[in-house]
Image (cartoon, rainbow, N blue to C red; front, side):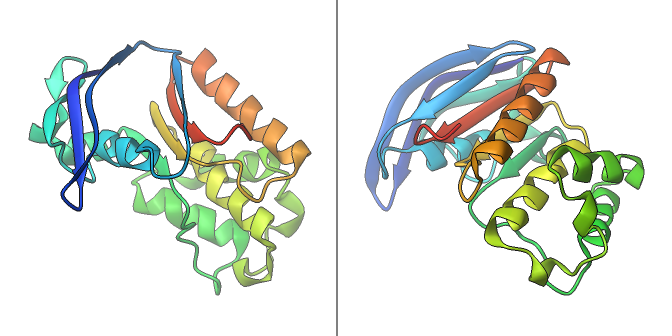
Length: 189
């Protein structure tokens, strides 16, 4: 489903990694571990099509993503450090807007909020949320709009133990339904 062949990455003229190869089939997960600066985020950005590799190819179902960036963007979620949330919107409103922007009806918003224990905050403005709650709202996007490929960069940041368990349960469900997850972590997920 997702195949990486001979992938290399340069940032700022420095070789970050080279000759990376792997293939993921439906239900697979790849956990990226390593110190800061080892290339975890760079690899996720390449997989998302947000950057071009210095070498190699990334294929989705046999097709090079370089030739179909718009289609590739529609098959993935990328959750990075910045949450991209608008503080003036309500929690539920924010998630519904996200779904609408991705061309989906907001039918999964309530269940996505419940999955990350945010249903009690649905009417609150995003700016009133703690950093952990904001992170959970950003992660709820994964469930509000289905996409087969999840690229998660340090998704456990600001989450307590109970909410890391919720995130891990969401990843397990996603994989059980045939989805893929590539997760960069320092061991918190």
